[in-house]
Length: 377
Image (tube, rainbow, N blue to C red):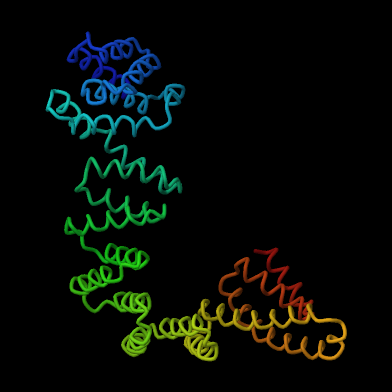
């Protein structure tokens, strides 16, 4: 039924347009259901500079590609890769064409039809299918046609982030704020993008704005700390972490962990260990400090094992066994933290670390138990 409706509209359009024009020849081919021929004829025109601003040619181009997209015939759909994009781009080109002609009105009607709605639907579907580049193309064109549609801008921003196109995502979030679409996710995403671009002053500006719109929200505190570290204002960031630990006791573990991360990054290992341990004391199942703390001890043990492997035989005879025991002692410290990680979240990298530790310590029973657990998972 839909194909018939499109075909009837096409017949009306053919009568309305000039059949003596170059584009009219393509329409006659369409009327005879010669879609492939119609496409070939119109393509030959759109590829010529002479017709670059010819509204009739581009309108007919839109019609042909629209029919290809909505066709139920699989062979027709295979005539081109992205017929929906081609159709919508053609109509948009005509809509923006100057001087104004009858084709502008026709194109604007098309842009208010199923063509534009399909761009949003197709873009959303492609995003869910993780075909991000194609999703960006469809949603980007949709937002050009419907620049004030917040749903389109939200989807475009999300797809832009997934595609690592931060400038596109940022521009979409800024447009949303310009349309008075001021939500917490928009502010958060925009601030993080600006921080990644090292535009900390601009990020701080939107953080101040976000706090006015959504006061007393802990997320702004976290972002404030993140921006302080990003601006190399370490002392200020540490003070903010201390304040947050007191102000938000329910999330104390997060701030303790972040202090651990800070000192870890500065190779202040004793302090890092202290804060990781404090975070774990608050929540024994907290994955991240367990993993980082295990990592500190694991790296130390590996350094010792590497030193032993590179020792000359004479040196090994003297201190090799003593060194090996040092490595084993430190590896035993790493082991319970990684075991907790694997209990909380059985990930492949943690399994590999535990396997290595068990082999070095000769813990065959633990190694077999780990392998059985891997098989079950």
